[in-house]
Image (cartoon, rainbow, N blue to C red; front, side, top):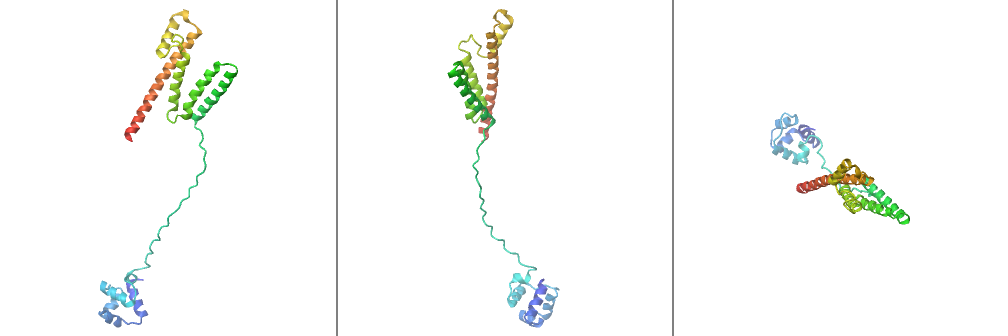
Length: 222
């Protein structure tokens, strides 16, 4: 309802004529008539007196439509999170580490029972498998450096048996090609050990340097 309709409705409900309302508000009957026909709007002080006279609030008198309801207070929501006992599966790197440990243990048992030389191979597998199981960062780098160390200990009891690194392997390869008298199977093995181990050291050194540089960059950013 509009303000004009409310004034007319409230006046008639209380059995008042336009003259009666005009007298109480100290205005002319024509003013009341214009209010009720929406030809004019009463001043604020007259709206307040109309509200008091009719026993309603100013908001109820002037508002067109229902008053908006205040928002309901939000209820705190309780979220229940079910924690399931989830077993963490092994990563691919850890699975390889487990395989190396199992094979190493099997070789150790066979070595103790029949061939003692297998014990050294078993020890190498066990040592190489540990970084894959335990190292959280760069397990392959740890394993690679351990492989280099083990090869130096196991394959170089004397420097004449196999070369220490890439330069020694290439030098032995040169002698193998140019001097026919040293073409023995042990020489081929020594050449392979020196070249492979030398290349492995270069690759490990590069990736170790890159990992160190990345770590320093993260520390600087953090």
